[in-house]
Length: 192
Length: 275
Image 1: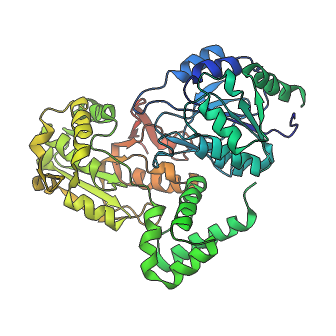
Image 2 (image 1 turned 180 degrees about the horizontal axis):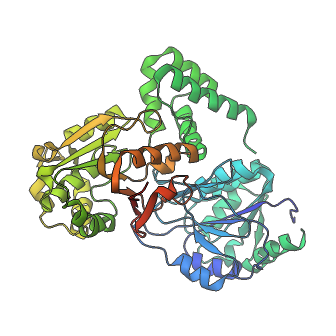
Image 3 (image 1 turned 60 degrees about the horizontal axis):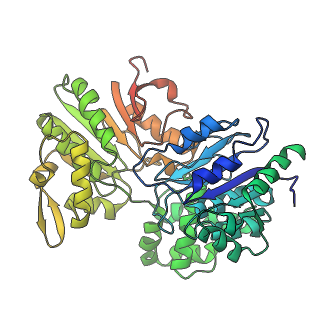
């Protein structure tokens, strides 16, 4: 299952996100080789504490995405509240204020679909806990482009709807505990 | 990876739009533009971008529908109140020193920001010496800006935004409710001009002391962003102000050196005196 070709990680989480991300991201080593894009559903018009909390916990740099920022390896990029995060084909980040998708802005699907276009088989998509179905369509796009799909095992998720929806659209995605997901990601370092 | 054939078709479609209708979207951010055009393709019942291209080349009446997908129209009165508070408290004291003022709201959509600034400038006693130019490429949005009518259900948000922006009056002083809409006072438009202007194709049209262009540049790629920021630089008077959207910056622009950060959090910049 380990992909030696992984060039980027795309991750989405909703209800219970902080707990899940805190179980996966802080364990990653400082020489982690790829960028990690993270979309979390947060209420609009609220400054995100998420970046600060993760920054304190992670060895990798954690940044809220800026528009047209060139993507750097070994960096965790968070979608800012109230903007969609998209990955451009020239490997820059871009933001958009377009309509919410499935009532969400940022939308996991939008980030996943554009990342799938930019990275094709080099992308690992990760759907974590959440109480809606965002990410299901996007993970399908990642799989269709030849990328890898990982989903938090629904019975271990604080909210199981989002992992369930992702597994329904991608029955061949791996269903893993948070520790197994962390382990998988750490394995990407060793495989270099 | 992205479907190579679709990518060719996508670029040809943008070329067709440019040659036939003279709207230049070739320098827009590809990821979001492609998403919107896929929605248009589906909504307009076309299987491919080539079919869509055929349709708009030969049927002029199909273009307005496509156009509505090409541009993003999202705004509010006093959106990001802290930005307007910073203009009020930090920029206005400088603007007061000018005998006459020009303000350019670039990409004004349906005019929300023009009305916000018109109200703010009235509250600050600068209205009579100020002209506000609102420009956009979307004729339908400009028409709505000219009319100054917004849905009534947006008014509670606008009112709260205005209050948080340091508003010195009641927003209800500026509109009357009629036919399910809030009609903004015509007198606010006395010092405002709405006109068609493309940041991708047109030139500088006035010397201004403040440019506000928020959540417009995010839809442009880096070269087009640089073109637009170059226009702002050239139209600003020395020490003039530039306000961007809350997640936009000059960090990656080749014109960054012509500006200094004025209020980092609110993305307000000031043109250098030697730029």
